[in-house]
Length: 375
Image 1 (cartoon, one colour):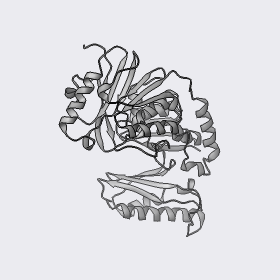
Image 2 (tube, rainbow, N blue to C red):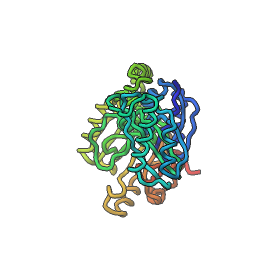
Image 3 (spheres, one colour):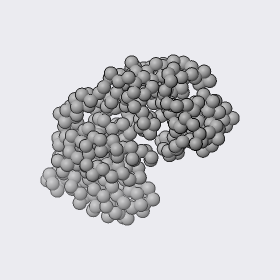
Image 4 (cartoon, one colour):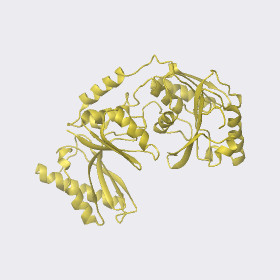
């Protein structure tokens, strides 16, 4: 069975995820704003869930159509082939959202879609009541500019929930975005990594997972493991494949520090849970005391900003200090994620490359500095 699938993602990550999917063997990969479309069998569905680093979840698309009225929504939904996925005992709750559309009541849309799916399945299975005691097929709908897209969620919990971070400090960075920063910085297994403001250690952990090619979803479960057309055996096979591709003998090593002792303690625990503690040296340190341990390095950090700092003066002082400490030199790459539009000026030099990314709903830029001499 071939599935038409798509990945909803943070804006700015579409190209990275598209490349990931091609590397995993997915077909028909197409990137759009906020999503990446692809197709494949049950093996690709499981592989994407287990090994994608920057994706939010893997959705199986059931269909798409235009609807300006509740009647059109009902008939369009009912016409789709729901029985190709959902069995007579399976559960199929509905959730979703509507933006810039004639149908703006989410609760009404939920009810109508649910009734339409029930009617579609009733015609197929010759029953009017569904116990919904079987496998979960979470229906997700989106209505954008009157275009309805209906899909079933194969992931369950969001893919950023790797399982190693049950506790974090204030304003944690999503694991998927941390992995994307490593991709943007072209982190390699031979690199030495630094984060002098590591917080709960997310970027350092994702850097280690990436360098050793450890699948981010290797230790968690997924909803589609209970689907009859996919099943646990497919996921088990893909987990075995993922483990065979790990390389824990890589020369990668990371130095991560933070001024907050509690944050450093949490970061150590997170690294242990992720199975990468041997790759990372955590310590309590002020960025004012930052000194590299090696001649070459890749530094990625997400400094405090917004309500995590008291005022603009504190921001300016921190960024100026970073400019002093992150010295332009051969063999060094620095990457800083911040929403501050004046970061270049406060840091003291213009970025060699700048990439727009979103940290949740906060529009940020990833400022990259890698040239050793001014051109």
